[in-house]
Image (cartoon, rainbow, N blue to C red; front, side, top):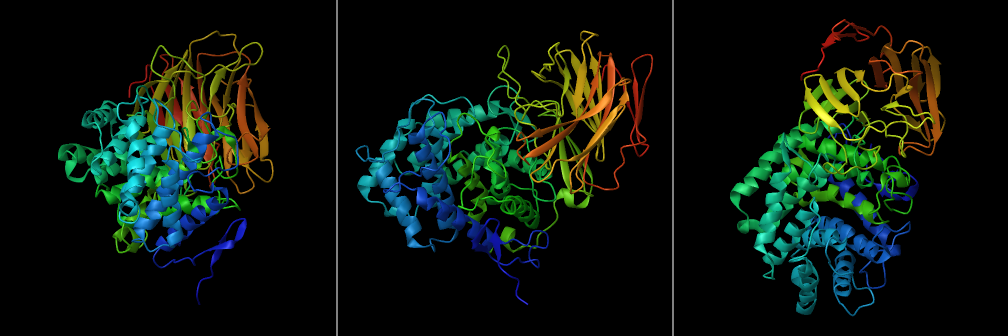
Length: 624
C-alpha cells in the first residue's frame, strides 16, 4: 500500500511526499521532502514581491534598518534558498524561478530603478545581504551569473564592490566581507586580498578550542558558531577554489569536524534544537553546519546520522506550523513571537533559515541522501558532555529525548568595562530542547537576591570557573554556583556573599503550552508544574531552604514554546551562605524527584545525594 501524502499543518493545499520509513526509519523524510518544503517557501514569497522582483516586502514590523533594507533582505535570503534549489537540481526547476531572480538582480543593482537596493555602506545591513547574494551567485553560476547580460553583471559588481574598503562590524560580519570580496575575485572584479586575509585571520583570534568560536571579542557563544563562524569558511573555500590557502582550509575543516562531534548533541529526539542565544527565529538554520561538514568532507558523523539530525529539525518545525498557512517564516519560533527577535530583525530576517537547505548542493547519489538514517546521540543513550570553551555542560536522556544545556560561561555582554542588561537567552542557568526561557526575563533558571520592591538582581557578567566531567561552575556578582548533573537531574550548589537580610528566590524550568495552563503543586521547600503531555519541571530545596514555601509562577504570552507558561520557584525570607537545590526537567513518567538530599560539613564541603542514590561531593573552593 502506498503511503499517503501529508499536508503541511494549517495549509492543506500543499502536500508533502509520502514518508519513506525504509530509507529514513526515524523521520520518514528524504531529499524529496526537502525539495518540496523549499518550493513551498519560495512560492509563499511571490505575493510579496515587488513588480521587478528586486525586493520582497513581507508583512510585519520593520527592522531598525527600515523597509528599504528589509526588502533587500527578502530578496537576498530567499535567493540563497533558490540558488541551492536550482544548483541542487542541476537547473531542472521551473524557468520562472531562475527568471525572477535574474530579473530582480537587474532591477536591484540598477541605481536608476525604482526598486534599486540600498547601497553597501559602513556597518550597514546590506553588508549581510551582499554575502548571501554572493554565495547564491556562485552556487547557481551556470544558470544565473553566466546567463546575465554583461551590463547587468557590471551593475552587480558595482553594487557588491562597495564592500571593498568599507568599515565592517568586528564580529561574524568580517566573514561577509571575506565572502563578497572572494566572489568579486572569482569574476575578475576589483577586490582587496588584504581584507579577505584579515577577515580570516580575525576568525582565528576568536577561536577558543574544542570547535568553539566566540562571535567577536568577549564570551558570545551561541548558534552563530554553527550557522556563521563555521559555515562561511566552507562557503568561502568553495568560491576561492585554487586561490584558497590550503593550510587555512585544512585548519577550518579540522575545527568544523571537532565542532560537529559536539553539535550533534544539541538536537532532541523530536528534532528540536536547544533553545539558546540570539536570532533564534532562524530556527532550522541550526542544521546548516551538518551539511557543511558533508560538503567539505569535514564531518565525523555517519551520513545517515547527518540526514537524521537535519531532517529531524526541519520536520520538527514543519509539524508545528512552520512555515505558516501563507508559506511564510514569521518572526518567532513556532508561532509568531517577537521577543526572540532583535532590533536588526525584520519581516524577512527568518529566511536565513535558507542555510539549512545547503544539503541540496550534495548530489542525489551522495551517501547523506542514500544511506539509511542512523539514530542521533539522544536516541540511544544518556549523555553528559562538558564543553570547557563556552563553559557549558550538556546532559541528555534517551527516555524522553530531551537535551539540557547548563550555562556557566556564555553571555552577550561586551568585554569589560562595558555593561548591559541581562538577556534571557544568555543569562539563564540552563536551556533545553523542550523549553524556552521566559521572555522578557522571568524567574526561570535564575537565582536572585530581591530588592525591597521585589526587583531581582541580574546575573550580569558570568565568570566561568570551569566545566569538566559532570559539573560546571561560575561566579556572578556575589554568588558562586556549581552545577552537578546526573541523568535528568541537576543539583545547584550556591554560595552567597551578599546582604544576609536580602530575600532570595530561585526558579526552575519554565514549561509552556498553547492550549492549557500547566498543572502545579507546591509545598514546603518544593514546587512542580506538569504539562498535559507529561513534561514536568520541579524544584526541590535540599539545603538552606528551611522555611521556604514553593510557588509556581503562571504567565501568559511570555514564552516562545507556548502561550501559557509555568515556572516552579522557591523563595526565602533572608539569604543564607549556602543553598543547594535539585532542578528537574523530564518527560519520563518514571523520573523521581524524591529521595534527594544534601549536607554541608563544617569546612563547607557539600555532599549531594541524587534521587537514585548516586552521591557527589562539592568542595570549597570548587576546582574543576
